[in-house]
Image 1 (cartoon, rainbow over the protein chains, first blue to last red):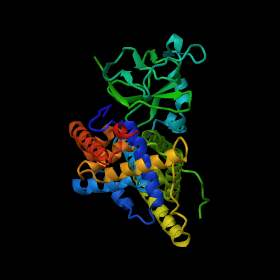
Image 2 (spheres, chains in turn blue, orange):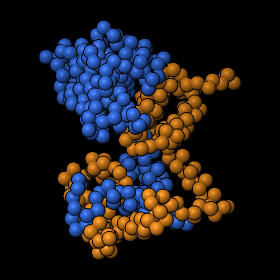
Image 3 (cartoon, chains in turn blue, brown):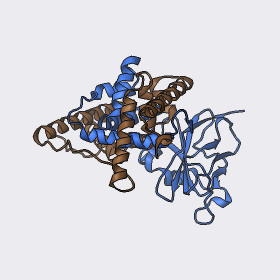
Image 4 (tube, rainbow over the protein chains, first blue to last red):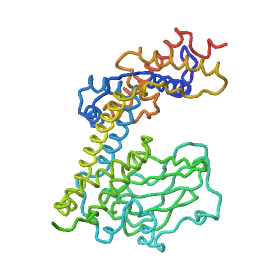
Length: 227
Length: 184
């Protein structure tokens, strides 16, 4: 809501700060509170409650630190379930021994350093990290449809205070099929053999900041289409 | 009895690790602690290990099994926390200590800030019901897109209700004499 100032000049940021303080003090002082049941919180994140009940449950959950923690946990599990396709094909045998979450380095090798190269200024330790003013990461391209056979270039906007950026490309099963670390805001090169025509992919970028924070972009999809 | 193995099949382990990675990534968005994610995924592993007789079938059938296991594990963890908390407050009545978040400045400013914060919390309580949860969620730091998604509302409807809710909140605070315009 930006800096809308109606009858009262208190900014959104200030309201948030005071609301957090007021809620924390209230939570500590309350002796007994009627909590939302875990089942209701799950129904809330699964959007299976009728609207009136959904609003009522959400109102309580947002006002109650304990319920909110459970809400965040269930929401993350639910969203992780929703981010994958409904059925996941068995992994190619070459991947079965590897833990996808830790795939970053090994996959970059599988993909092959010949096919993929970071732009010249991207090698860690050589150049200044590209920095900007934004606090999150905004990805620029690719998105939508990408022609098969053409080089792929991943680009995003610089983030202030970034030490490096981690790029990941995931297939429809949620497996990382390509990853790179860079100080640049571009990763470019020929298409790796793990990014196939006819398939849809999602990619995102995480910025690792000097202060340890790791803001991440929203995932962006692209589909490789044969021309 | 066949010798028990502490490990899941490689394929299933891979699916679990993949899911754990996804929860963690999504968790970044929701400011979820790693400890909470670890607790759920540990529980998931235990459950899958117990069901290891059919684990090969699980691993080849679908990863949605892992998802369903994770949802039920997270639910059970929430239930256990509740039960533990209830036991604790029955035996020791130490949970009623107010949590005071320190304010910058001296004790007087701290007191004043606490009072203003109390007024803000109360003013939020008074917002019209249809707008209140949206305002709470927004003030708790959730982005508008997530609020819209959770409530199944359009971006325009969410924006509208949030805008009105915040305007109402500011008006209520002004009535109470809270706000920059009225501070000396």
